[in-house]
Length: 242
Image (cartoon, rainbow, N blue to C red; front, side, top):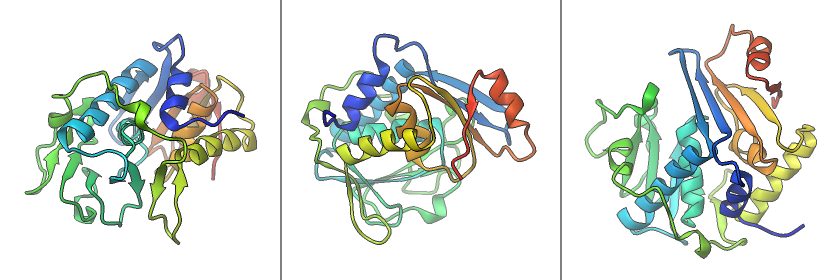
């Protein structure tokens, strides 16, 4: 199998029909449901990569922490980092830039630059960020929808670093992991899957759907919800990754 990096996998999954759904996100604590196409996620990804490269001067060799739950904005942050060649470090590591969800400000990693990310519906900006935390949604909207720097990313460039217990994973290793995970869970090419939980791994909710060129219905705070009925409504296959 040809070795590829994560931006290449994302581009291949986007393919010729960028308007098709990629992430459908539910937060049953707020009643939020939002559906994003591959094109929309690509736009947010590119804005994030441009913020990192043009706004913060980061790139290959830099590190970021993404202290966020499974969320559609987390997809854009992770893909934006990997598109810019920025490795994602474990949340507790010292990093060059940190992205922290609005529910985790007290646990922000050590970083010279920290962006707070609102988890409110409709991507509303932060209105309660502590001093020293910049509102990501306000800043990222200043950057373009197209990013031209993804060609600098190498297959063997680090994608995950400072993992618990040590070690790192390259871009190519994460691509391969997404494909293997799809095989383990018998997720077919182009499948639309439903995943629920508040501690889902990006391997399952992001890399696996990309590996098969499919889509994901991502559910948070869904205790008590009839997820089988939701899967039927969304024309998705419910997958248990526990």
